[in-house]
Amino acid sequence: MQRRKFTKAAVGGVAVTAAMTTMAAPAISQGRQEWRMVTSWPKMFPGGGVAAVRFAEKIEAATGGRLTIKVFAAGELVPAFEAFDAVQRGTADCMHSTPYYWQNKSKVLSLFTTVPFGMTNAESVAWLRYGGGQALWDEIYGKFGLKGFHAGSTSVQMAGWFNKEIKSSADFKGLKMRIPGLGGEALRKLGATIVNLPVGEIFGAMQSGAIDATEWVGPWQDLAAGFYKVAKYYYWPGMHEPATLNEITVNKAKFDALPKDVQQIFTWGCGDEHSQLTAENDASNAGALEVLIKQHNVQLKKLPDEFIKAYGNAVGELMKELRDSGDALTKKTLDSYYKFQREQMAWTRIGLQEYLNARLIGFKFS
Image 1 (tube, rainbow, N blue to C red):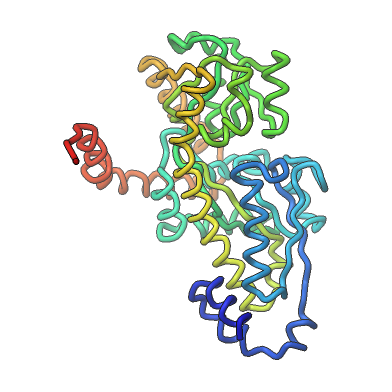
Image 2 (image 1 turned 30 degrees about the horizontal axis):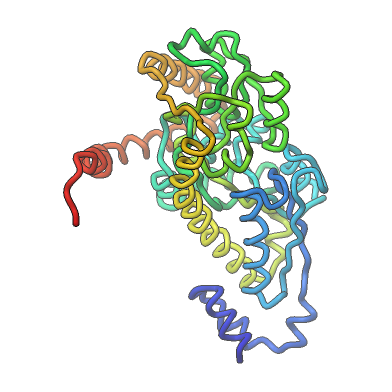
C-alpha cells in the first residue's frame, strides 16, 4: 500500500498510475529494464549534472523500478559532445544535453535551445507545446532515429566573462571566445574567433589564455564553475541566449519499445524536470550574483548599446543566410519560430514587458 501511494504521488496524476499499481508483482519484475544515459555535464555539476541524476531517480520511483537509468557524466562513457552519436547508434539509450550542441547535424537545431534576441523560456515552451515546435523537432530528430523532450531552462543568461572592458563592437575583433550556437556564429560576423568547449574544459582554457572570454549560463552555475578566478569583468545582458533549453533525448526505437505507461511516465518526468530545473536556476541566480559581487569582487558591467545594435544586425544577417541556404524543413522551422515570436511580442510588449518596466518604479511597503 505504501508503494502505491508513493508511486501515485511521484507521477503526480499521470493517468497510468492505476495500471502501474494494480499490476501483479511478478509481471513488474519480469519487465525491468536498465537504460544508460550520457550527459554533456561534469558529474553532479549544478544544473544539468544534478538534474540528470534527479530525473533518473524520479523515473525509477514512478515506474516502481521497471525502468532504471544509469547516468554517465561527460567523459565517463563518451565525451560531452559525442552524446548525440552515442544515443543514435545505441551505445546509450538517452542523453541529457542541449540541442545547439548538435548544429553540425542541422543548424536549425539551435532553435530548440535558444536564438539570439529570440523567445523567452515561457514563449519557447509555448511554441513547442502549442505552436507546432515539438512536431518540427520530432521531424528533424526523426531523421537520426531520436526523439527529444525539453527538460529545463536557464532562462535569460549573462553575456559572459571577459578580461578586458568592452567599449564598442570593435573590441570583439580578434577576441577568442567560447560561445556556442547561433550566438557564436553571429559574433563571428563582428570579427571574433569562436570556439565551443564543454564546461569541464572552459576554466583551464581561460586560465591558460587559450581563450580570452567565455559565456556559460548565469550567476549560479558560473559561480560553481569558478570563472571569477580567471576573469575580471562579468557582462550583461545575455541577448545571445534568452532561454536556453536543456533536452532529454531518447533513441526512438528503444523508447517506442517501452510499455505505453512507462513511455507516459518518461514523458511526464521530462516535463516535470523542465519545471524543476528552470525554477532552480531562477531561484539560485540572485543569491549567487550577490556572492560574486560582494565576496569575489566581480565587476558587473553592461554591454554598450552600440554593440547590442551591431550584434542584433549580425544576428539578422545570419538568420537570413540560414533561411536562404536551408532546405525545406529548415525554412519551415524558421518560419514557424519567428511567426510565433511575432505573435507573442504583440502581447508581451503590453503585458510582461510593460509590467516589468512598471515594477522598476517601486513602491513603499511595510
